[in-house]
Image: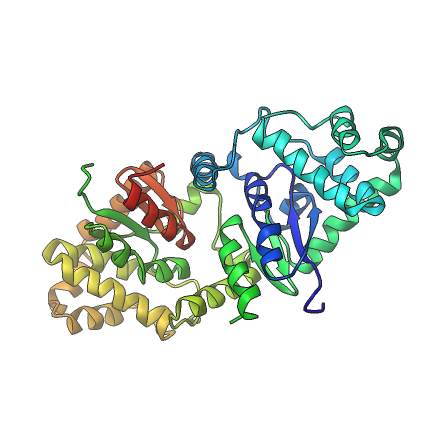
Length: 202
Length: 202
């Protein structure tokens, strides 16, 4: 890692806190002359390692989480709805992201933000290849090639490998952000990240 | 709940984030003309409901938590060590707290802060009745009466009842803070609590 390498922003497309952090992370990095690599990964795979389960399905914690998502979104002035069904199936979105990224990183990030907006800004469905291809095409992506890529084993393996690499690095939640090698977990760590970038750490 | 009722600050004496929040919560409430009722409870009982376990014992999450405790404490300028053994046995501390509280609420809060400081400020042991009695006596508590109280079934039942009341209200972590009936989980929610008290909510 060099002092100018991008921040790594790990998130799951089904994560409300990832969505909320996605509204702030690029601006915070930009204030300090840094960029952000968005890196979708699969919390379902992580949960097999940590023994966790989706927050909203847990006794006591689930009810609080739904309330906190809404309250935190209102505090940020960000539109927020919990889609039904929830959690969301994100395999197609994650696979499409890395395929797009290898062709056009800026398009991939725009795609990721649009997917998040569709899910949590509008409560829409992104679980199908059709929905994903439509969002990619609206950003200039090649829908036909993406449709073929979504069933390509190498594309499937790529998302698995990215997820395993995140776990190997110590990531276990969404958002999970590395500033160089310093890990930060949670949308409520953006303020610390801002301070870390400003001061070089403490 | 009236607009002037105390905030309820639920915490486990073995919780680093409870310790960190304990350094800020009274001042935040005080800014807005409010007081805080400190309410130790037993996360071990909560975990039986939520299916969770102590954070530091969990794969991936444990390593991150130990790093985040230290980093958050440094950001606040608060002394912090993780005692060994950890987690800490807190039954005596919790029982003593409510017994003291029924006699002198200010002494009980001072006792709680001293217990937290002994654990996480100094890495000391508070698991024994002797350690607890010594801390209470240093604040003017009646050590002999407290020694008897610690083996009194009614005193034991009180801590259990406080823990169950917290769970019934929806608390599941440490710190877990109610502003009137609005729940906030985590040391990183103090800023939202400050804003909530200032604005009356959003």
